[in-house]
Length: 213
Image 1 (cartoon, helix red, strand yellow):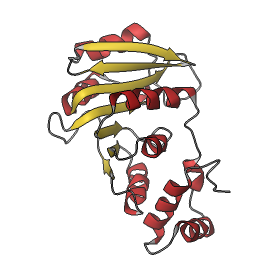
Image 2 (image 1 turned 60 degrees about the horizontal axis):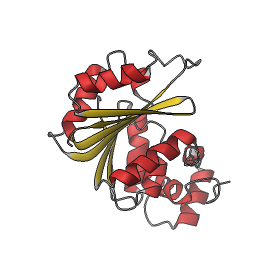
Image 3 (image 1 turned 60 degrees about the vertical axis):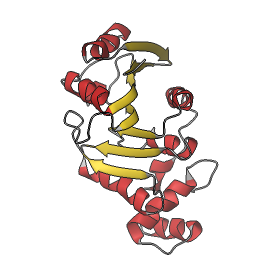
């Protein structure tokens, strides 16, 4: 059941509208989406997960007007960010066409401040300093060579890059590397960050790499 207590109901409704067509209010869009078998479970609330809560707290402190989210995937971080950061313009990218299309449907269904693009994180098609903040959340552990990704993130962010990665091994076959705090810090320092602050939160590391002082 899609309700406000368990899901980002308004985003789920936007997704259903974006897929099925305009002209439906939230209730009608959700009902139509469920009848059509759309995967509405992707909008389950995640803001209370410790790593998501840490990211939201950091972003509230940074108070960006624009944000690039790299590797948005199924929206574990993206939906909470859109829900909590009212008014922030968000560009979400993913290398997988299906995931980029799902995010684009949410934008099309009523989130005008959201843009979705299919793009490779190592070759970002944006001018330098295009966004206040760039986020790369539970993505770098999937990347064989994260150095070009870190460099591109620092290039397109005016102020800072926020990253999260797992801090211990797990059974996810898509994870190709495990970062230590020093390794994560070094990645962004070598990519040109002025300062990098690394912290830990229940099985994950978070890093804020400052582009400007």
